[in-house]
Length: 481
Image (cartoon, rainbow, N blue to C red; front, side):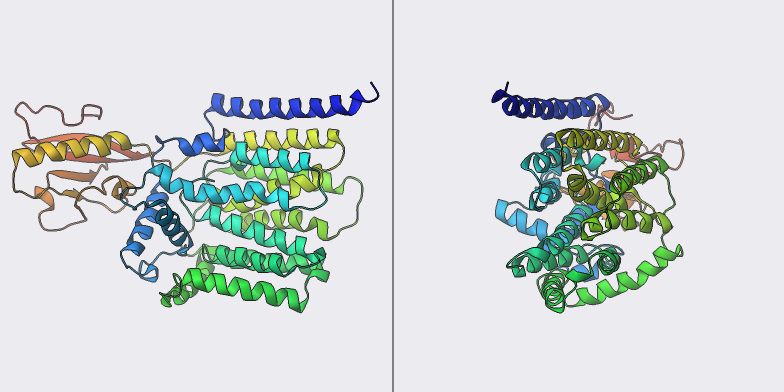
């Protein structure tokens, strides 16, 4: 066994990793959860856009038409996602009207791949540890369903994770200037996504003062500050074409204090199971860290960041699961490989607990605002209806009227048609009308058919459609008539 021993051990580890990958995928398929191949998830065409995704699509589309991003009065987000998406679509030769759900979600997915690649930037770790953690991130999607959503969070997390990681890794590098410049770029990207990144930077600075004061030299700070400012200003002003974007960021920043204090747009905790799962996972990592009584050092910065960010959002009244994406990704992409490095047994145990966390958090996470309407039938059958309506009404203008305020993501799925929102002249005469359903009293309009269209849990619309055939043949045979 002498010479065969190492070969057998390596082969056993490879087989074990493959079986573990298969297990994670099978669990995800059985539970119909996001714990599946990230590539398979991004290729799915059926899931409808979340309301927030449709809003981001609309803002990005408006920016291509010359509407300044600072004019859209977005209360939370910056223009980073819109700019990046415009760049990706320009390379692909794609317009926002032609973009499918897959096309939109591909953009944040590319940044999620950057998060998955973070372990490879850590020095002093074995290739097996790096690959294992990267595979877990890719298969598990950090135990949530929104890592590939068309929202700002994935860009913010990717920018901040790489910014903090490169700051720490550059401390001992012989030529750290390029790493510091990239670290600043990551922080600048995060700032152009959400003003919350400013709070993250303050917590990061405090952590460095306590655990890694030696990294805070004036030259290093200057490199990162210059790069972060350049990237942030460039993105926030839409490549220096919308200088009011800086003022818009300032308004969002001042407003964030009202949100933090609970006086403005407070969102109470609705999904405690997910928060408990993450809290227990971080407690496990802290326990592993203390095992062996190693003194505190710069190596503990990522663990301290993950815990601080979790406690930061736990203390604030505004609570949405998306806010925890950063501490979760830091713990999986950075803390886990550092703590798992060592003997094969240590790696196996660490991956086992990490897999358990990913599965548990996925099961505990409610999809409380998931879009539920039949988007494919809405888009396709409404297009067919429009063609028939134009044949019956030659020369007349076809348009859609949507009443009510909480109608997202309808604009994305109605983008092929002229649409009017709210009360406007001619709304009642529209061939197709969407009315919010406040109860079960179905509207009855002579010469029209009425359908029930669910949008989200507890929210639906009445769709009133003009008859175009004798006998009132159903226009949308797969809808509730």
